[in-house]
Every structure is written in C-alpha cells, then in structure tokens.
Image (cartoon, rainbow, N blue to C red):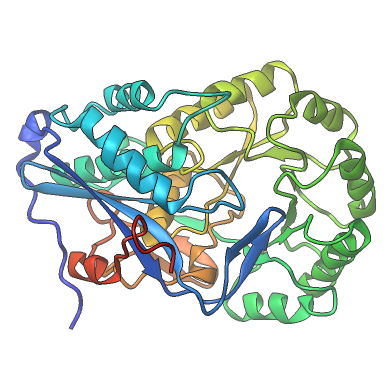
Length: 399
C-alpha cells in the first residue's frame, strides 16, 4: 500500500495571511545508505551505516510543511545533535506565533536567535525551518513553489553523476554505472589523493566519459593557491568546465589571486554562506561561477536572494546539493528551476541515500530530474515512517 500523505487538506488560499506558526517538530532519521561517498574533509556516507538527516515539520492552523538538514561534519561544523538543539531550543521559540507567510521576518528572527559570525550562523538548522515554511505556504495556497514565487523557467534539471574516492583504475566502473542510468555529465571530487593521482582520476573520467560530456571538479577547500594552480595546469586540455572551491572558504585574497591566473573558471561553494559573501567576491573580482546550494545558504529565502544577486551581477550560476534526501532534493529543484540553471547540477542524494519516508515525490529519469508539480515542495511525507526511522541522537548517539 502506498504511504498516505501526512498533510491534511489546505485551507482556502484567502486565509494564507492568517496562518500563524503553532508548532515546530524535529526528527533525526536514520536513512539507508546506498554507497560510500567522501570529500576532501572526510566521509559523507559509508555503505552499511545509516545516513543521518534531520527533518523539521512546521504546523500552522491545520497545515504542515517539511524541511531537511544534512549534518556532514566533514563538510561543515553542524552535527545532528547541534541541528536538533538549535531548532528546538532557539529557532522554534523565535518564530512561534509569527505569521507563517512572513519569510523575511522569520529569517530576521533566526539571526537574532543565532547570530552571524564571519558569515552566517547555523545555516543547516535555519535551512530546515525555512524550507518547511516555504513548503507550508505552498501547501496552504495549493500551488508548487514556483507558482508561489512567480517564477519557474524550466521543468527539468540535468543531474551530474559523482565520482569520488576511486582510483584511476576504478573510475571506469563508476562512469559506466552512471552512463547505464542515463547520466551524461560527471563531477569529480578531488583533494582526496596526492595531486598526481587526483589528476589521473580526472583524466580517467574524461577518457571513459568521452569528449563533449560535461565534466567539472570539486576540491572542497582541499588546496593551497600554489597547489590549485598546479592542479589547474594538469587539468588544462581536459575540457573541465569549472574548478569548484579549490581553496578554504575564508581565503578571500587567495581566491582573488587564483582567479586572476587560473586557466579554468573558479566556482565558489563553501565561500558563499550568505548573499553578502557573494557581493564581496563580486566587488573583488574573485569569482567566475556561484554555486547555488539551499542548505549552505540557510534555506530557500536567502538562496533566492543570492541567485538574484548573481544574475544581476553577471555571475554564472551552477547548482549543487548536500547529499540530500528527497525533501532537500525537491527544494533544490524548485530553486534551480526558478532561476533557469541550465548546466548539469550536483544533486547526488539519490546516488547515495534512500528516502523511505517519501511517497509521491521527485521523478528522476535518465539522469534528468523533473521539477515537482504538487503543492509546496511536491513531496508527500509519510509521518508514520518518519517516526519509525527517528533516532534520539541526544541520548543514544549517532547510529
């Protein structure tokens, strides 16, 4: 039997302005892991071990919305434990009783509760709650997010297949697996080996993917300026379309130096936690490509601001996720469709984790994801399954 939607019928759209946030609930869920995945900072998913995600449910006058946070300590400082306590003890009380439609006001309340540091504070926790509010509003209005926002420029998003951790001799099997599933674009995680091996991995991917297949690399902050320039020199001639986050996120001077001499366009991900970060890099002429990533920016509200700023500044947009399950996948697709991102994107959740809590959800066919048409995110959540998958990370630890 198919899971039944947990969200009751929405009230009339005319009552949207009357919705007030009544309850916020967090669920740390242990999801099945399909295969292992690593970045320069360490493991993201390990085959045979559950992958933790934190789901957030926001309720207002009989309507509910859902959001997701992906705790990856190898990528950022937020853990499952910190996300749960940040939402439960700080963010939820800050928005209790507020109008659900006031996304700008909710984000201001988030910043008062957990203030910004160098960039933005607790973006993953804020994201889960912000996405849930967007989902709630779409459901209350009975329309998908693109209709709610008044912008949806495409119906399909091409996905990239991720190659991570394999040796040059093993790359062929990974590329072949992606091709068999219909993927024609490939992203390679580098910074996991020595420079020569990293370059050999990318070379092997290009050989197996063939000329013309979109190919880009992501170092996840793994290099120094000199190492990044050496790597770019090794990759010259392989038709690599972007060198993503080669340096530490806060090395603004280094990224400016790199962009001046790098033969491959420099794309920034971890450096762009807040729209104001993008503004800084634009003014310093230290960026070629901005990576749109919902969780890194603290949700859809700030992500939309950053994407609009990139468009207005003439900066190319690419898309990426955080190994999200289906809620995060849907949120990213709505954002990318709203801004017409037409290059392949790294939304790799389906490659590495399963989403057993999701009923009707995102269709991925032949390496292409269809932007959902249902209300809100367009993901029907089986709350009974969410509760079955839930673990108490505060007392029992990570499974």
